[in-house]
Amino acid sequence: MTTHLITGAGSGIGAAVTRRLHERGDDVVLVARDAGRAKEFEARYPGAGTLVADLADPDRISWALGQQSMPSSVDSLLHIAGIVDLGPVGDLRPKTWRQQLNVNLIAPAELTRLFLPQLRAAQGHVVFVNSGAGLAAHAEWAAYAASKHGLKALADSLRHEEHAAGVRVTSVYPGRTASPMQAKVHSQEGKEYDPSRWIDPESVATAILTALDLPRDAEINDLTVRPGR
Image (cartoon, rainbow, N blue to C red; front, side, top):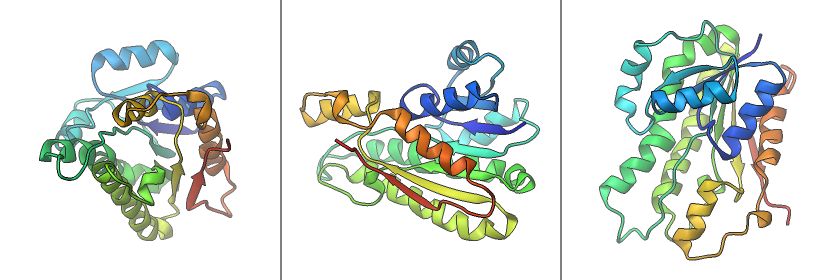
């Protein structure tokens, strides 16, 4: 049985990916920020495993996981969780930088470090759901884009380091996707939010599953998904 460890399963792309993997019978282990959220996941996805760890506090992830039963094997690690907070560089305080760097970059690096032994043993797959902002930064996107540019660097380095161990590494760069995060972005931009204009999370989920299911003779390194409308 294939086991996927997933962050960001609560909404948007993460929820779409989790549902698809759960429905096809794969084992899913979902990272929840607290015990209440873990219970929600267990009710929504019967048979799913959960791990409680707050990605906003990466220094404590190792300790938190050390208090829980770990999955016996991990075939893929899917980093889908993310947060965004826009603002011009002249207004961004250190707290805003740290919050986005912690969740979007440092927590994925720490989870990857902790589960690398299992991923090596399985010749598994690490998927980083990045963003178009991980390839180009625009006004008022400095902190978020910096975290996502860093995530690209993390993925690229990891790919070179773990290639010989048979670990595949994929970065996915979705454009604007209909999700609660996108609603927040529109609010911060002062724009009306119309989800029909943007990518359906199911479409991004299809791209991610394509990378996961690719035969072992090939590997998708980077995958950009743009709105078709």
